[in-house]
Length: 357
Length: 117
Ligand SMILES: Cc1cc2nc3c(=O)[nH]c(=O)nc-3n(C[C@H](O)[C@H](O)[C@H](O)COP(=O)(O)OP(=O)(O)OC[C@H]3O[C@@H](n4cnc5c(N)ncnc54)[C@H](O)[C@@H]3O)c2cc1C
Ligand code: SF4
Image 1: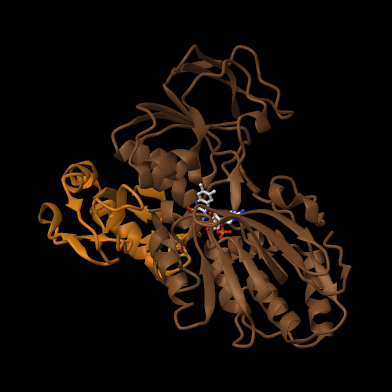
Image 2: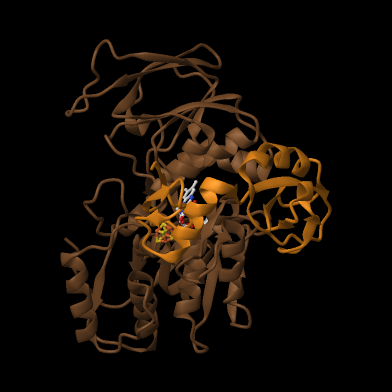
């Protein structure tokens, strides 16, 4: 039996392992890919680590630095293994699958789910029109390009001005694609202004604010898309249609915590749409494990390294948070990691639910 | 007197700054790095470049790389052409120099990931 099993070896899982570490605890990280680092491995652009390391690192460099923090610590890692189910009884029983051992089970007193996010799909935002090939999330295109070496298209349009979309607009342009534009439903972009400047303006890629896609045409491969301006109620305004001949549409319309697999745990989820599902519990008293867990939790949450010793302190801190939930800052991996870690920080101790809203 | 408005891209704050085209005086920057950026953006705009090159790894087909410093903005596409000629064999360490003095800029191309196999 492990004291803590961490599901996911991305920035959140690695940071959680570091913070939870105690020589007396048996800790295991389970990662389904062949390498640690998670999504950072495909985020080859720079801008990571400004707050944490006071350096401009690329995603892979940030991942490696975070991984190095674990050097010399007795933390087990199980690679190439996917957690497919979790049952909570007296302890947590995890069902795991990997190519060498097939299906097997491991138990833990506590688990930390740091399984990251997936990007919203076409059906989640109810895009109209045909369903040809050539429509995918910006992050999938990023993975194909940066890790697998495939260009997904030559004439590209991007829906959603989230940072992943902006980064991909620049990346695809540099690799020789023509990016015809980015449409954003809101009257403002939700990406960093810095990315509007260096990813769109630098390459004269137009940004259509208050616009959305109103038609998609294509039999086998995407042929063209139609965008229209929207009014204050987000209804498309007739007569404002613009057609773009493209072979690829990338979606950058938000992230959703990747926790469906763990639904059997029934955690409390945040009402914030498109953000994280957060479950927060207040333990009644502390022991080493709880302190470690809490420390992880608080550190990840507040970004501070102050040890929270007394339940009172924690309660105060949580109350503060509950009145002022931390914003999801996608450009600070530490904070985002905290958010995804928070997605479900579950303690195997007698807990009383503590409301976040 | 004409003023050029721009966004400082040095950090995620993204200050809207104004640069006087004659005196090169910068306003609106929240920190000194913004003044340096504004001046440079008018006289010699530069960008960091991150991309990938071919690698013979079992784990992934591309190796992420970056310029060790910013290069003239006008050279970005030419630089991509040069960098795309690079092929790398494992093992490679993050920080290994893969191409020296890219297009005579004095800037090198380095790996940003370690891959052993
Ligand atoms: C495509 C994309 C691009 C992004 N780009 C940026 C960016 O440029 N800048 C930025 O600040 N933020 C970016 N983000 C936000 C990003 O989510 C965070 O910055 C942060 O890196 C996430 O770390 P994480 O550890 O929570 O998740 P991840 O890095 O996704 O790590 C989760 C890990 O868990 C593993 N895993 C998942 N499920 C299981 C399971 N069942 N069993 C075993 N292992 C499992 C995965 O393989 C993965 O390695 C991006 C997100 C996405 C999806
Ligand atoms: S001026 Fe300073 S604070 Fe503002 S964006 Fe530039 S570097 Fe950041």
